[in-house]
Length: 454
Image (cartoon, rainbow, N blue to C red; front, side):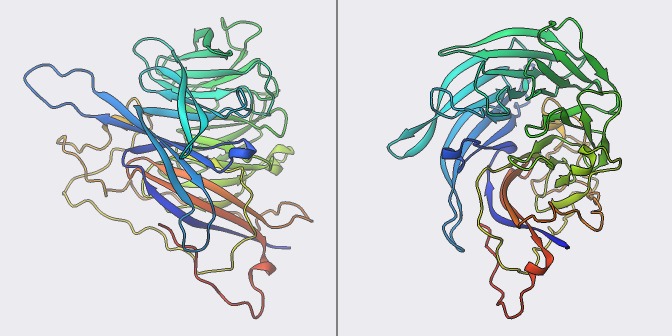
């Protein structure tokens, strides 16, 4: 039986500031809640006095998603909070004091926790705790130890721009640093727990190294140092459904799958045509992996064969190509969508645009917020490149044929996703439908209009 893969935009939202992180709440009662974080460098005016360190500001958006009909936008903004620039967001996978808690890594070196509460006008976030990781650093990432829904000993791990990792313990009224150490020679872009053994922590840095750490042994030396990636390692995610499976991504434009018991050789290597800034396993399907690939869009990978020990790259099931800038934030929703909508004409690809100023260009650099976020929108003369400038031509990611199904007896599947892109400051909410081919064309069925984007 053949299968049909289709993506469809539901709504587009202008975040005004550069968007780099988006997270759906994983708790069932609040799975309609979406958070989006932004990062903006505030340029200093050039004067005769030596300029001070430029400030990085951000904004946290909170949305509700409700499917209210064909012509009603499903996403509603319910709150915005001005903050320091946000580098990463993660919801705790379990309630804290019976409420959802959102963790935030900020450009002033803090880990902030915000609690979702019920107010008169609906849900909103309130700040509850903060911890500084240290002076003169940016907090670049965070992860919770609760990835498999286990609530005992709730902890966070964070990485920062000095190359350090910090492990934090969440108490009833405190967020305490219980361990901090120098892990990488340059920026430590990413940190993550092994969700199956939360005494194990992984980290990736601009020194091109992927490292493992056993908190029981102390941080004096890593359990392994892997140099399989050829550029900075910037994304790591432990599979919450399949023990020992780890996904990593790098500026080298490759997604690697690993068996944690053998970190010398990956299970598979998949070229995705862009630096892999974020990786997210599906909330319920162990073999589906979402990748944010910087200047080459967002892709959904089918990893079942690789996890079962078969060599070769992971097939790309779907790609979302409607963003016009660097792909940074991406997440699956835990909401269950209704059956796929009727077939409609495919959405057109974005029309490319050229710069008006002669000689202008985007300096796409494989660096993260501390560098390319701050400098890549100036041309050789230091002039600001217009907002409508797009990055260089995107690299295509060929989808293998035939595409693998989800199983012989699998029913159709519809997923809700959110993604955001940087320089055009856009948040997109979209759906992916995976259906048997024969269900796509039923004799006598009338075509309906596509779901509009707003």
